[in-house]
Image (cartoon, rainbow, N blue to C red; front, side, top):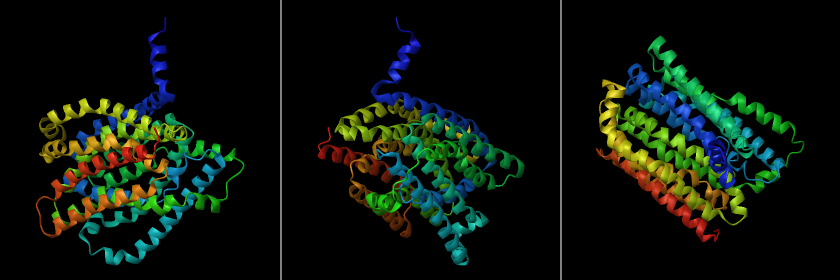
Length: 425
């Protein structure tokens, strides 16, 4: 008779090891989220909504630039059958990242006197000079993480997330207690970006050293030209649709609203980080195999069903409790936060459900479709919101939240339809 351990192990190894891989990533991410949860009630008493507004501006700028820092070569790393080709993609990612950072510092140096005229830049003060550093660290981690995904080193990825949580939150607390300055939030963000780089870097260096040949960079660029050509703009439109509205809201409302949104996104990002990113990492490692066997559609539907079953009850409970618990947990500075979280729940539910399978368009070679989707999403989520802000509408925050829900609903539908249309069952 099988022991309970053997039964659990057999279950986790089912379906090509998907559940086992997810469980490893979820375990590491769960630790990171617990650290964040424990620290949040302390951090909200050290830092005000206005402080989080400044952090929101910094994170928005870094996030927009970081997503294109490697020209999207990094997301192709898990796809090639040959390691020599994947190695070339990794080198292209690093070279693109370094080149962009140099350009950013040059542009920042030349335009800094002009940028000082904008109030949101004045809020950042000297910390704007750390934007390129944040972009570099984020891009480097992304390239290393995708290489580790290719090698199915999910345990290492999980450990880096634990390191990021400890370094980031530890810096926030230490500087907050020592100085009371919002600088702790910026430094903590940088420490979070850099956490785990050494661990992933060592294992990646070992791999690359034992791959004696490298595909021609020129030939690799030509073969994967659609990634910088289409995916770069797609990713830029996607992240801009999330982050640019924060900059618009910060520019036009000039209050703590961005701080409230930032913290609400941080709270709702916990299930996103716990479930969505873990499943996305594993889906990306498994999907190319199912694509080659012409079974990607069925596999994708099964993953969506699994995610729905996992998240539906926690989100219902969160919706019922959010108006009552968060004001108490985070302190009197944050009264009203529960209301923000409540109305943002549908948006994040759809985001968690759709995000793991969003890479399917790249796997099936539909980069143009992905680009068109993201460009339309950018117009819907940013351009319309900017018009509302210019005309002084009081609904810009509400529109930002609603547009997020609707976009992810449409995106998921298009992804599933595109896979089915390719007759990949």
